[in-house]
Every structure is written in C-alpha cells, then in structure tokens.
Image 1: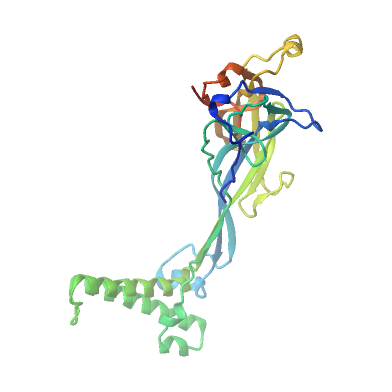
Image 2: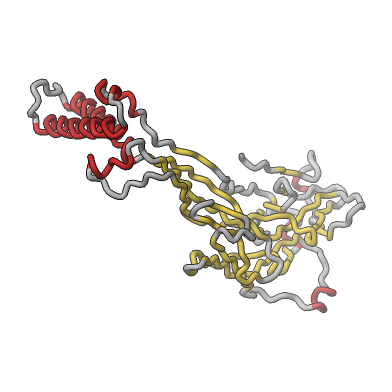
Length: 350
C-alpha cells in the first residue's frame, strides 16, 4: 500500500513577496498556534526475514523406488522443513514525543510549504520529498503435485496389488524414456513434421514421466513467507535474542527454545558530540530544528557466527541542531529535505 503524504501550507492567497522570517518554537500542548506542529523521528530498526517452508509428501510407491527405478534414499514418511533465506535490514521513523516543534507565522506572512508524513514527521520544506515504500510481508505457496492418474494404463489400474501397480508403473516410465530417446534419434516411423511439433511431443512425454515418477519419489510443496521484526533502541543492545528460527517449525517466539536464537547487538559509535547540561540550558529554539543522528553498529548473530554487520544512523543516539532563521527570510526560497527515518538533512538548497 502506498503511503499517504500530507502537504500543508500555513496560509494561502498571499504574494511570495510578503514572506517574512519563519519562527519555530517548541510545541506547547493545549495552546493554539498560528502555524503547523511537526515531529522529528526516532529511528526504528526493522528486519524483514524471509524463509521457505518445504512440505514433502511421499509417493504411493515410495518403498519400491529403489527396486524398480534404482532410485535410492527415497523417504516413505512425510516431513516439513524450513530454511531461512535472507535478512533484509532497513529503518523507519516514528514520531519522537520529546522532539515536537511548531512552525509559527508572523502577521501578514506566508510560511514555506511543509511536507509531513501521515504521523506528523517533517519530511521537507519548499519541495516534495520522495517517500520510499518499505518492504511488506508476503506469503505464497507453490504446489508441485501432478495428476499421475491420468497417465495410468488399464493394466496398471486393474492390478490387484500395490507391488504389481508399482512394477507396471515403473515399466511405463521406462517405456516413456525409450520413446523420447527414439524420437531424439529419429528412429520412429511417424516423426513430428517440424521443430515446434517435436517440442510439443517431447514436452508431453516429459510431463508424463514426471507425473508417474512422483508416485515413487513423492513431491514437495513450497511456501515462501516473510516476517518483520522491529526494535527502537533507547540505548546499546548487547546480544539480545531478536527472534528464533526452527528448521521444523519456522519462526517461533523469542522465548521458545524450540528455535535457534538470532542475537541482535546495537552499539552507539558516538559519532556526534552531545551537548552538556549547560549548553542545553542555554539553547534557544529559533530556527528549523533537525536531527543530527549518531552512527551505531548493528550486528545479527546466530549460533554459527555473524550473519549481518553494518553501521546505521540512529536519531535517538544523536542530538538536534537548527537551521538559521535567515534561510527563510523574505526573498529566499530554501529547499530542505530530511531523511524520514532519522530526521537528518538529506538535501539543502537555496
């Protein structure tokens, strides 16, 4: 589903020549303000994990596969196995209730156009931000069973024992293989007239062989599924069980010991200098506020070792800064775009 974008302007019908300096204040709940409230985000780490479920159904003649077709290792018992395919790590932003601000207007002025996300996060000023759609979960099943009964001969159907039906079916498979070889060698009396006809005949023989062979080796249906795990770290995370995965059960709860653990580590690299208490006390909100995120190492491990390791920016590990109010003075058209997941400056142009 595409994300909706809310584009707001504070006043309409005024000439751009009347634009005055934009004023930004901290959000004051319950007080009506001539302006628009916006939030800066805190960063949510998300992992889209994809896996394949394989359900094996043995063939009716599974125990005769080695005797009549010389196929060894065919299981006579149904089974279900899971395989973890990949981990897709990405980020999203959610409103940080400690970082709410109001862009106010002065009398007889018009403020810049402001683009907000549906949750009120500031995305852009005086321009349109491209909002990327994040991965969505999906489940799809592929069936592999073929209708073998349509290829059974009268002799096979009339046989009174499973062993005899298996023997006759195996002979039919061998006859089909011989027919394909004769066609490929050009040894049949009525050869197909052209390449397209030849392909149709061979494809049909291949389908018959695969369907009848399933009666011996069985078939495996596959289901592709995805699940999203998310966390919003407020501090460093050290080898926390993020999720568990079982080769027999698939994704299980983090406290379910039936699955093998996948551990998450998030370590703030302190790539920005945080203001001390004196600086915070002196700070005055007088310009457009944006985030300066800090980089953090994200590591995912299982019992065999590290499966993912990369540094990502996190808004909540960093601090805020402000753009000079003069950037939005009369006669200027400053265009600003922020990263939706971090609130950091993506693009700034005058």
